[in-house]
Length: 199
Image (cartoon, rainbow, N blue to C red; front, side):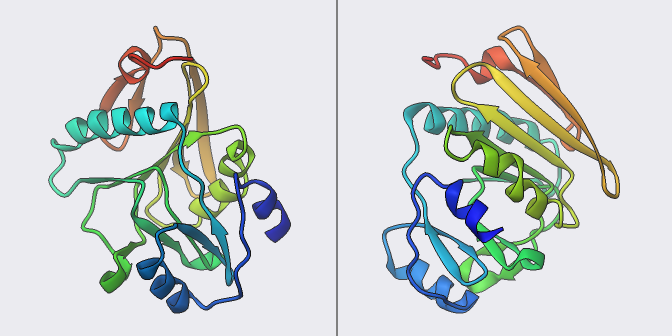
């Protein structure tokens, strides 16, 4: 799995094998961000204009939806998610929490219980986001909804958990499409999401 993980990244940098606490200490003092996978660190590259814009658009749209939920919180990009089963820590593009946040390490702001995760796809990380990363996310007890957003055309892939080890999948393509986020009971239109995106 380690080799496939490495190949999927935009840019990788093996520093040294660290335990999780050493990784957290390093992230405090470095200007770069790294994903952590079983003692190895993988350097994250900067986002494209479309990636950044779509993440921001989704944050606005989902924050508006989340206001109806009592405990809901929406976070983007810079919050670390701990996946204990896979000894992994990543930075999802967007996470939504419907329940009070549970921390893997509160002092370092590492969370562990998102209900919905969004990733904006790039050509170099799409296989990872569809494959090993999604498999790791599915080990999280509260995780129930996954959005993969294409930055190259108006297209969204939507996965919803309906039972343990059972997910349903829908694909939406074109500016006239819309989809419902089940955990927020919220409709998102691709025309709103992709407004002003230049392909």
